[in-house]
Length: 284
View (cartoon, rainbow, N blue to C red):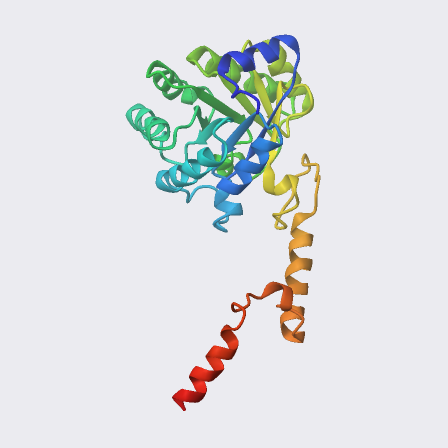
């Protein structure tokens, strides 16, 4: 099994032009499988608010929920670089809250880094977390926790002026100590601009092919979340359809008596059925 990547490995990959992969994963079994597949980074993302808990968005997620799932993912993928996603109001309220909650991820879940959303206004939190000895990934562009301020889930950085604002945010966060910048929902041209201007690696969530890494939700990748699939997702499997088909067949076979068949049943030891009959007869 490959050795777990470090921050230095990701920097070297950027310098050499080698792309890296990240998925949002929320449970032990999925983490175990993606590690076996050679995935280099896992985000335990607050997108589980939609995918796991059925919320309308990510805002309701709590630190306790995020840590609980991060612990499960760490057990499933001990050799993968794991990023814990700081949920809404766990870091915006104060620098102290940001450092304390980042520390909870490290101490309680054993993550390798944390992620927070926001542009240059979050530079003080980024700096404080980094100064406390932790790795922090910045998330700019389309930021789901504050989507209402953006007018909804809309593409960002799609004009020259907007692209410059995205670049300015990225530079401020890099200067504050972010080890990586995640770009979500921006044109490929903006993703390319930021990637070329930053020394730290960039990772794309719908930010085009020029970023140093690519990321989507595992549930989108395998077709397990049928509610919504973003434009930037390529579906590599249709597991959701297969689950529906399998469960439908299961229900039908139970009703028809096909399942369980003899091959699915345990048997008493040889001669024990006769003894049971004798015991029942004697009891009567």
